[in-house]
Image 1 (cartoon, rainbow, N blue to C red):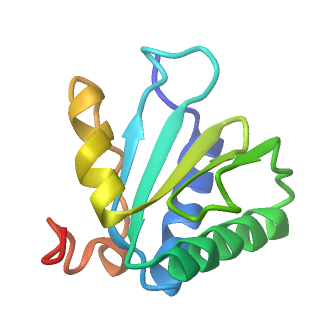
Image 2: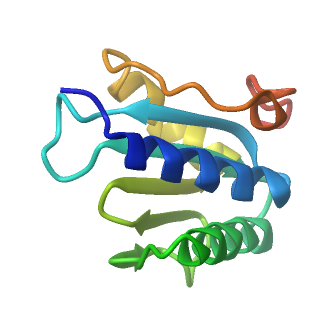
Length: 130
């Protein structure tokens, strides 16, 4: 099983929204073969807590505009690692040091990545301050 076209559309929209707020190292991972609760994880890094929150707000606004309701949000008050659950996709926005420590990409390395637009991935790669 692979991610649905709708999940891919939402993941791209979430990644673009994160990029609009200067989110870094944005990736999307198709976890549909491993999890029954969601199709795609979108992961992005922010440089500080206010930026993490701004990225999350941007993602929520963009997906709301596509008619998607957020099911759950965790960690927003702290702004270090925020999880946004939209059902078909789950968005993780983390401070760079949290991302390095938890290394979600390593945990899900056996899952295929979802291609994101070059406008999102330009300059992607390990953060210089991570």
